[in-house]
Image 1 (cartoon, helix red, strand yellow):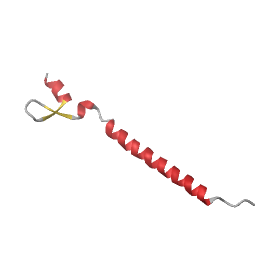
Image 2 (cartoon, rainbow, N blue to C red; image 1 turned 180 degrees about the vertical axis):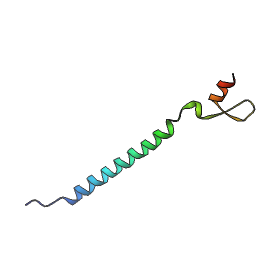
Image 3 (spheres, rainbow, N blue to C red; image 1 turned 45 degrees about the vertical axis):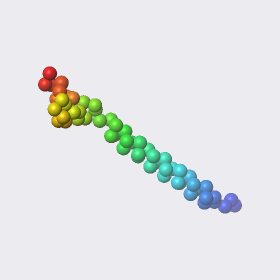
Image 4 (cartoon, one colour; image 1 turned 120 degrees about the horizontal axis):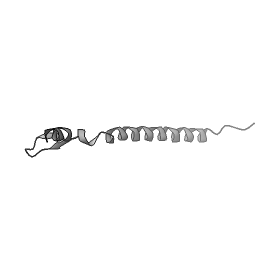
Length: 59
């Protein structure tokens, strides 16, 4: 009867764990980057933070 290769199983488990961690990291990064541009604050002429959607409404 063949003997189980525990080193191979351990390595496969480590690889799967790294892939899952990387997917989570990319998913979190994607959520941060997916914020619309018009919601992020910009500096107005007076140095006060103003969102672009407010600027468009004031015009």
